[in-house]
Length: 435
Length: 155
Image: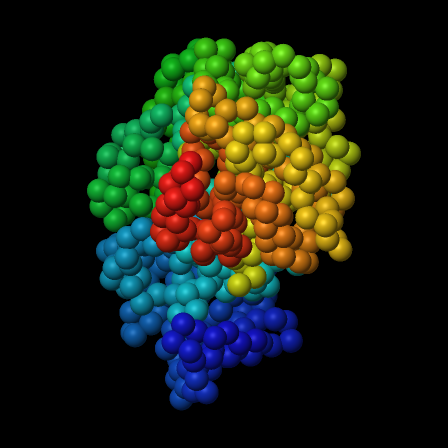
């Protein structure tokens, strides 16, 4: 395998019979070779050697990792534990000789650099999702494919076909284009356990993912706005300035578990996610009530202290896992400005006879809103879908005796607005998992 | 190169069931009612035509149509199909015409810079410009070109 670099030279790679990358040559000059551990669930690099065969970097594979992650790195005579955030990104290092933070970096959700690595992480190739960054190409080696953190996409199509019954996902996207809920260290299909997974009885939510106003519905807590921690213990660098996070709903009771992710960048260690679990008080389940929990906080390899958290969320403790819809007083905003689309967004439903192809456009738009707004309020199913280049939330339900899917932009110029609606055909029903 | 094309191909295949190329054409008033597209060797399997009604007098003596060109898969000759339809629209008297993603059309944002990355070809009597590659569409040059062309054709 080879690639032409921006400076015109060619980088060539060799692989062993198992597909592990074993050497890099740039412009005809051998630069590096690698050794691998194949006994882990995914092969992991254990050593990097220079052109003379001298070991330059060694890694200690994590035997429990399912994503080919490493526990520690040794390079230039310095050994460090590799600490990851909730998404397996290596965001800090701690000296193996003490509890000193020896390096830090910040990555965005897709692995692009937010803050340059410092200290012992500055020269480390292990970063996004705990994977190896190829210095020559700027691409992560995800085994079956290379991943470009700048674009947030793979450079090749997924060699694993989308299973029957799953919604269609773009073959170049990383972890269903949702790296907060999944990883794809093998390059062969995401380990996502989020909303696309039919087997996963959980629901992951984010404050910034809510479309329209936050709404409390049975079984789901939405609109997580803050998370503060009163530490009891001596976790290194633990800061009570942490103020944002996400939690995963347990599905069958008033419990949450998830990870605290500090976003304020007040200090490097604040970028490290702490695993957190908490039980919510059943008496605090409505609207913006507070829920108090106490649980274990794990900080990488450091001794785990206890802490208690305050989780402010709108939640309910009954039933399980309905789809999230718009609040009654917010749904109207999704249709604002639709008249100025000239009929573009409503045309598919008009073709299907669900909207009369007569009368003024204003009246047709009004019919469209009347027909589809109940679906936005109480969808039978929701899912994310890349729609004409824009990430949308799709709301599926019944209208006019037909199955209808309404797409609302989650980003871009028309965020929060209805972009279009369709009556799905048989192929779409299967891909989107509709009844 | 493959990546750049894939963003476009994923966008035009958004429905998960076939491929749709959406052509938007601004004609002078009553100029677009007979437009039927080019005659080619590989026509779409279907074309849906929509009159897009502008609010108030925003088009100033013009009218806007959308033509959804339907294909089973991404056509191998995508670029030539795009060019042929733009050329045909121009020859039919279009002031300006463009291919854009589903959901990108809004009379408040005709060929504006903030939706430029969702427009992958544009044509007028001054010529045809393509932005099939993702890098071109997301660049500042393309974002500046669209409103400039709109101004140039008096729209």
